[in-house]
Amino acid sequence: MHSGLNLIGGEWAPGSSGATFRRRNPARPGDVIGEFPESSAADVAEAVSGAAEGARIWAATHAEKRADVLEAAARWLESRADELVVELVREEGKTRAEAAMEISRTPRNLRFYAAEAVRINGESYPAADGGVVYTRREPVGVVGAITPWNFPLNIPSRKIGPALAAGNAVVFKPSPVTPLLAQRLVEALLAGGLPPQVIALVHGGAEAGAALAADERVAAVTFTGSNATGRAVHAAAGPTRRAQLEMGGKNPVVVLDDADLERATQIIVKGAFGLSGQACTGTSRVIAHRAVHDELLDRVARAAEARVVGDGLRDGVDMGPLAAGFQMEKFLGYVRIGEEEGAKLTTGGRRLHGEGHFVRPAVFEGVTPDMRIAREEIFGPVLAFQRASGFDEAAELANGTRYGLSAGIVTRDLDRALEFARRSESGLVKVNQPTSGMAMTVPFGGLKESGTQTFKEQAGPSMMLFYTQEKSVYISPS
Image (cartoon, rainbow, N blue to C red; front, side):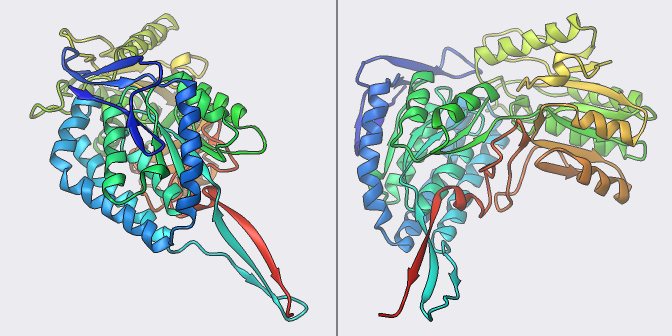
């Protein structure tokens, strides 16, 4: 069993209250991953104080040195890839293949932002008096990073990487569902040469997250998680501090009457049931043209029934457990809601026998826009089928939600694909691809209630704008 610690002021230490929590393997809850501090508001305040000192050190560090640290951290992660894959499967519940993908992607994220560190630049402008006018991009100071459990290395690396590249210090509050992987990321950065005062790690739950968001010494808060928590973070940050939020989605795939149904089935199943349905960009709705609806439903239901559910470390498993007991209860609750509201459960929707948090993926048909399973983010393997009479109705149904994170369409018609991309009220549009997955080099962020619209990007070079502030300098000849 791993004994976790906070990193505060450059020192590893238990929480001040002495309270701890245990993280267990969701496939085998008797397997205790580790024990970690349940951090208090006092721990967070101390962590911010230490990071404020670290911010001055790191801001004065040359960009090439900052890049070197991120590059070295990437190498550290790669050198331990095999053991990290096993730890990720045990802690979060991914399959081995899904874990390997995340472990390989995280070093690439760090390298991408290592390159951005040396590209931070301002602009110059003509001056009327023959002098110089230019802008500087400077670090904001202390960044608070509050991250979810479903991608415990990939998402934090896309927040902490650019924050450090820009010269900021970071207070990192990971989800209590995946504390060990968070600690591994911090260990990688320290092994890469990051001064320990520049990053703080505070484990724990809601109290620690709320304290970090509310601390006025934290210049910018970056958050990925639920809509309700994101709203609370945004309110705590207020109008004078920066907040970057990614708050989930209710992502549709539109399947038109000309679609290749075998390919459409593969796209839907990967988006809906990959990562056990626990991805913010995962597919939760299928809007099928009436001409193909019934055959597509049958194909998807049979594919769902064929999913091999089990411990992700076992060969042949393609869907692991839900990450925690509360996730399983939420899944089962939404299955009951769907049936009570009149949708037909075509397949799945039950818990599997055994000690782990294993469930069969659920497919509903006869879903109408007013039903909760068509409107609310479930964050689990629940797929709602809706029928559309044609392209216009399908596009309208796709947009008929308060979220706007990801949307997809499956069609052979380029004109209708481009029209869907134009009309879609989502920050990410996928044509003949799953709604999940994106390139780290491309801007990513949601529309409507899926994210803040001032600083919505969660990937790509535009991320650096959130972690830097602009200063204009005027110089006249003496």
